[in-house]
Image 1 (cartoon, rainbow, N blue to C red):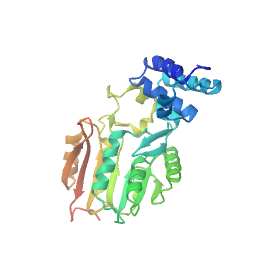
Image 2: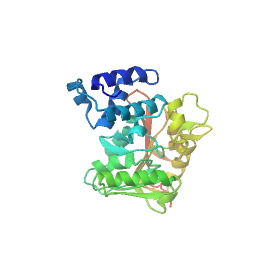
Image 3: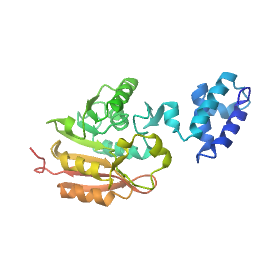
Image 4: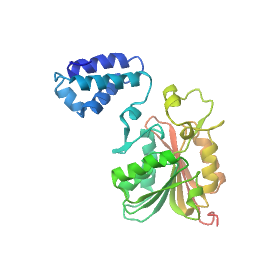
Length: 287
């Protein structure tokens, strides 16, 4: 690909990537942008610009990695979420657009000026916690994860975005919360069944299994969080959970069984039930 124009390089890469991805042109532009530091708009404005040999070689190496199924976000080492640029590595799940619905629901239940306490369980890269923190500067947000490697990435993202209202704590599920209570608990836990044939092969091969696979039924992590949440919520506090698109009814039933009220599921952009929430009624908070 060396000594080519930008147009030639992108065309060649697009043809190659069309064998492995449904978005070959976009992938090619993202990879070339990573190598050159140029925007996609610059590629469209100046397609005749010559691509230096070194950049062409580097681009070729990245295309080869993508041809093997490695996700674009891991190749580039970053992913955009809620208009924030987050560092990602194979130690953390790649943030998805549908997870922004968790952020939207959290913002709906909080006021910009209120000093609310929020817990993000299984934070991974810190995406949900940091997105909320960017919109609620007076909130105190505690983000937890069982993975030391994931928390290292989350800590780097906290520093990268200079959001001082987020703190991190290591541990399994809600255990790191100790005796603290929160106005909101949010989570995008693992919710895929171990033998789910619908799990994309690229995801299965490259993303951390502990952030994807919940157990034989796919509901195990959700059940743990729902069962323990009342110990850590203020009366009237909200629990907001992302889940699989076929799990809405099961999550609603479990929330109601634990005494949550105003239980409701919300649809993602594809029209699937993706996030379910419930409020802890006064008198149902456990001592």
